[in-house]
Structures are given as structure tokens and as C-alpha cells.
Image 1 (cartoon, rainbow over the protein chains, first blue to last red):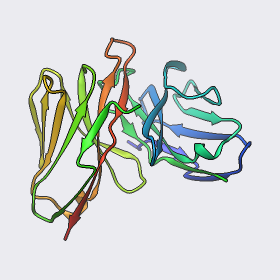
Image 2 (tube, rainbow over the protein chains, first blue to last red; image 1 turned 90 degrees about the vertical axis):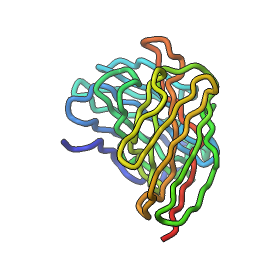
Image 3 (tube, helix red, strand yellow; image 1 turned 30 degrees about the vertical axis):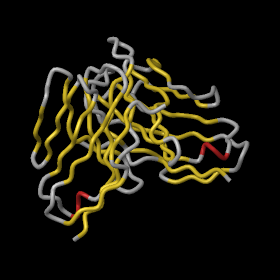
Length: 114
Length: 114
């Protein structure tokens, strides 16, 4: 099976712009989670989707949003970008909505905000 | 916020030696997982140990869990250059069925010297 894919892999934006990142889970996986990784804060949970429904959300401002489509592909959107949003954004998929299942991570999208 | 704290933050050893890294966490858990991340890439799941297990093996990996001390250790035996990576522990916070999310520790940067 193909692994989790994320597009784009690299992105440069300026403050105030918005950005949309995409994640395609492993075939058959219905859960997609998003994480932000920065040197200062480490890996932070953003949100999780299962069967097109957001099941869980981390402590991020409303500028961060996401959605999941019927084919389980997911997108996350960050509006009004700030310098501090520069990070590696990782998505992970699993067969079930419970984190007691193995999470399979994509390679990430590296976002640089100037 | 970080649920887990890894110790040490960085570790350098000679190839062939064993590497041990530790993880401490704060709240009760259902399971604890270890992940590896090669420089700036996605995470790879290594092993999952459940709260009712004390030790688990997978190839050259040995994981222990002490729920009374809220700590876990990852031992990599006979290290190889390819083991150079960052290692993270992850726990399921809010361990009420249906509301779990993965919370990652701060990571240990392991360097294997050829």
C-alpha cells in the first residue's frame, strides 16, 4: 500500500496570507490527525478527523481549521498567517479513531512564513 | 503542552553500543508509543506498549513501562549508523474512551558515531 502523502512538501508564504495543506491517508484508513512541529513547542496536536467529522481538537486558535472528504483525504487551512506558524505540519492516518491504533505519518509539509 | 519528557535530550554513542532513552509522563495512560523521526521528516512508529504490559521487544528494540513511576525506557541494542534520528514517546491523554489524542514528548536526539 502507498503510504501517507502530503502536498505540497515545501511552502513559503508571507504574513497575512492563508495556506491550505493536503493529506492523503493510506487506503482504507478513515482517521486523519494533524500535528504541528516546531523547535520551540515540539509536536503539538492540531485536530483529528474520522469519517468527515472532527472528533478532537488541540489548543490552537480558530485560524487553524480542517476538513475531511468522503474519500478520507484531509485538508488543513491556516488563515492570516503569522511568523510563528512556520513549522513542519505532519498528518497521520490510522484505521480507527482511537489513538490506541498505530499512527502512520506522512513526510510533512514544511511551511515558512516570511 | 508536553505530556512526556525524554531524557537525555541528546545522546551520542559509538556504533555497536547500546542506547537507552527515557520518557516520563504526567497523567494516567492507556498506552505509550515510541516513534522515530529522521531529520525533518515524518515519524515512524516503532512500538506500542499498553498500560498492563511491563516490557515489550521488537527486533533490537526493548521497551519497558513502569506505570507507578509514570516512566518508560527505550533500549536500542547493537546500534547502527542508520539509528541516528530523534526518538519520541507519545501517550494518549484524556484516556476516556472516545476522546483520546496523542501527546508527544520533547524527544531524544540520538547520534551514532561510525
